[in-house]
Length: 132
Image 1 (cartoon, rainbow, N blue to C red):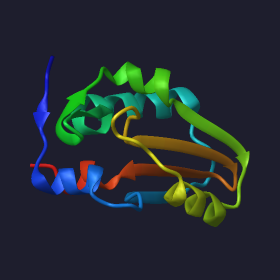
Image 2 (cartoon, rainbow, N blue to C red):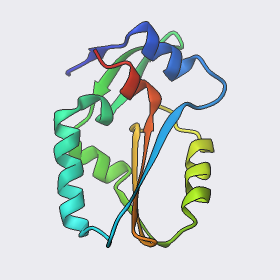
Image 3 (tube, rainbow, N blue to C red):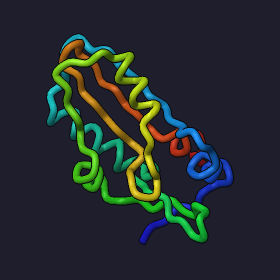
Image 4 (cartoon, rainbow, N blue to C red):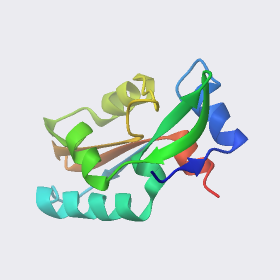
């Protein structure tokens, strides 16, 4: 099994705060992206960035490693979620406040919104800030 040691900085973000720590980014689009094209782009990104498809391995209550999963595991566990319409600000707020446990959940969520056309991405902070 392939493992990446976690840095102290990652451990702090994965396990050290009461409040979840995420980055949520919204991209406004001219029109919705085709589902298959977007899904292929996400899988390519997951292939190149193993932290985005990793869960935390915990020993004695402390995260000790990030264990990469196959990119397809993201499709099975999370997948690309589609919404017909959404209040983008409310969606962002909801995503920022929703818990995500890196011991069992992959750190990337992606939503497409048809009205208004947008792509909303949520990523656990540790996998962005702690890359080395």
